[in-house]
Image 1 (cartoon, rainbow, N blue to C red):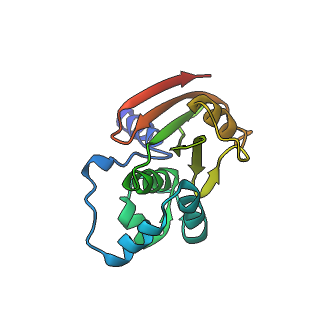
Image 2: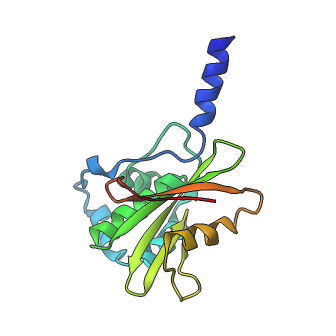
Length: 173
């Protein structure tokens, strides 16, 4: 009985978005992939590309790298935020990922954040947001804006990671 309960707790804690570590991603030698990401030279273009080409599919135990996501065209919030962060970093943008934790469950959500000339923007899955053209000033503003799209969930905390998965900021509700 104890083993069953422990197994259930472990499975629940693994639900939601995982984490792909970009430190170990090696650029594939695929001319078509390189041509594609070369054209995705702004966060808005990346969001539009993901919206037009990727389908949301939850991956409980699988975190594809950006190339694999590009090939299979199906991924969850972690997969898409990793893709977005990797592509803008390839274009010399400063980029971050934010992991959002909700109250009352073990579910997590991940978004990609981009530093643009006018401020911060982000993608949530395939959707690009820049605060209706005014951009954001802080990570907290982005988290609060994004949480409005999840009215049935209450923010517990968020963690901001840089490109190399170093914690940059932790915020609580």
